[in-house]
Image (cartoon, rainbow, N blue to C red; front, side):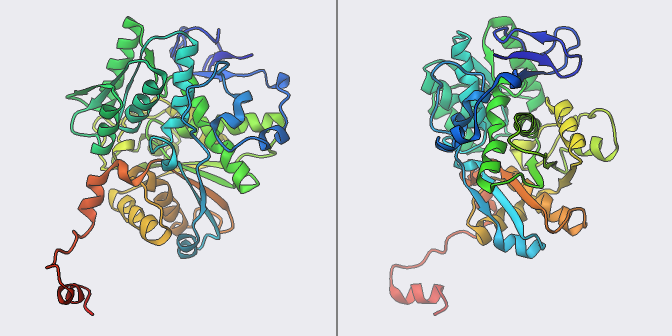
Length: 401
């Protein structure tokens, strides 16, 4: 029912071929469905629970999926923050409410299921944290070994804890994420492990369901879809999925795809603002938002197309702007997210201040990971608890009552 196609030269490959790049030109691959043969109706989807597998007709898995009930994440109307920014229709889709606490679960339920479907015996990835946590969780569910490579000293403790607790073989390298990805890619090609970074086109198929759900929850296509950009898989996946909905006649237009990066790690932003045909990698990306500390985004080629074809944009935000929005989301909306997640809303605040967006736009910001993914960064921002003697006068004094 589907096959793989090169996004650059159009070369095609069978669905069951273990391949991550085009053999002819080396570019990325995508999953292509015969959409004219897909007869699913919107009413059929509406009878199913909101989840990744609600949309199974547009997913490549034909076995019983390896699932932990991922997806179905809440879409919150950011009323207080929206009022402050002059945006009446500002929403956040909280992907931190997935089983392992990040959007990566959408990709991993499909990716690990495909590993089983393709009869692979073990899985591997490089990670800035969330991918390793999610891979470990779904590999454990599937009962297969998982290997993850992390850049030493640059991964939040909450994410390492998840990978370790769920039984992954965790290896830290003295190098950055981009080097870790090169190493694990070579390992998979030479030793037969199944690579589940976002270079794997099947993993992105799960992530596109973020867009499907947001449209269903909002009841319409948003005017703008805003995502943090690290490896650029998410923005690419959501765009691809919405193109498929449009081809099926389920929607009649596309939102402006908008990517937000940290100022210290912003190759996609530079390419968009400079109108460059491709990104120039950051050799030493730096940001405290560790989930998007990636200097050479694997899916940059796809992301640039998504942004440009929809009339979207890309913007960078400083670490200070990211942390300020992390606090504001928590204290003004009750939404706890890790720093990288706050980048999307911080980016919208900046674009609103610049006058770069219409005040009446319906805007969906994806917040990608839960607050507890990076507790150390949280603690550093907050006042420590007040310690008092165990008596009422001490309590009243501390409360200034």
